[in-house]
Image 1 (cartoon, rainbow, N blue to C red):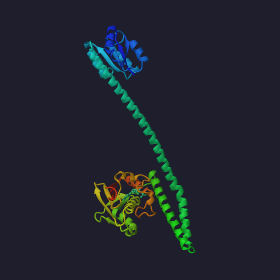
Image 2 (tube, helix red, strand yellow):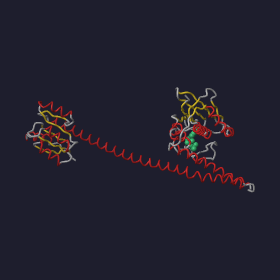
Image 3 (cartoon, helix red, strand yellow):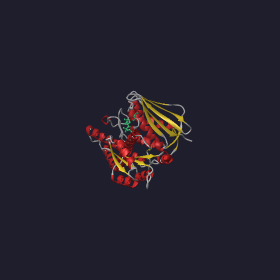
Image 4 (tube, rainbow, N blue to C red):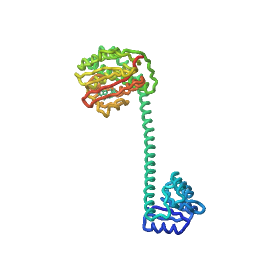
Length: 390
Ligand code: ADP
């Protein structure tokens, strides 16, 4: 496709000179006009006009006036003006206002005209390319916006699923557990096999209840209906109550938990919620550390207001790229087929909700939680910051 060039000059002699100069340039198609009116007419009919070259001094409409008017009809055209030395201040002004790309001083040299046109065409193409890229960018961001809405809808469905799961399933699950336990009270005539089946059913029902409780906790935190009852508590006392509960498991699995024994700290938290968090972090550390491993719990002040608590294990570790994602709802890194029904057996699994609940609780206290690991087999470290008592 040739480049369309509109040339405007009231003197025929000048039009002919331009035509002669450009005769050998086959990539240009020339449109000639002898005044502004005629030029505007051509601009209305020919699309696109890549370049407009106009004389400045013409009867009726000046070159700058014509170029100003052409902006509305053909905004992308490159505007070049032919002028005498005396008009220079007007030209500079027009260039500064962005109405004119270049001016050529009369009498122009043929090569100068050719080079100016070539540069003009390059400029035109660059502008078109930029517009194309902008348009592409706009479409991509619209697509992203659409996908964002879809994701938000999915998140909404997920939340609703949790609501249904926690509210609607809790009651029947409690009934099942209660009924099975009642049955167990009257099971003296059952044979060993029947008793074993009943015991399995009760264990399963308890596990189901635990999962639903976790769902329920999640929903409450998600909906921000959960309120915190804050008070000052000893960090050591909180930890000790948990460690007592897990002792039977760590003893069985020969896992040693070392707790910093100096400098107890008083933290300002909701103890019930924070126990839930610590319990989850410790139970994960136990679950993901092979028998005979070690867990270290320590803490220190960071500034006058916050304490940092660290849980380090010698377990299976977490790949670097997963360190952030483990805090996502339902995220589990390891093969769910490994799951056992225990919260403390090696590689035992929950529903993948624990850490996301921990994150909500910790952030609800104005703290932070994050994980570090040198990778597979190199252990994991979880850090938590919480407000200190005043
Ligand atoms: P789950 O219910 O599976 O325990 P969590 O949210 O508590 O869910 O943990 C998410 C995932 O993070 C776990 O499935 C596990 O893959 C990984 N993870 C958590 N703690 C540790 C740890 N101490 N060592 C190795 N991996 C861990």
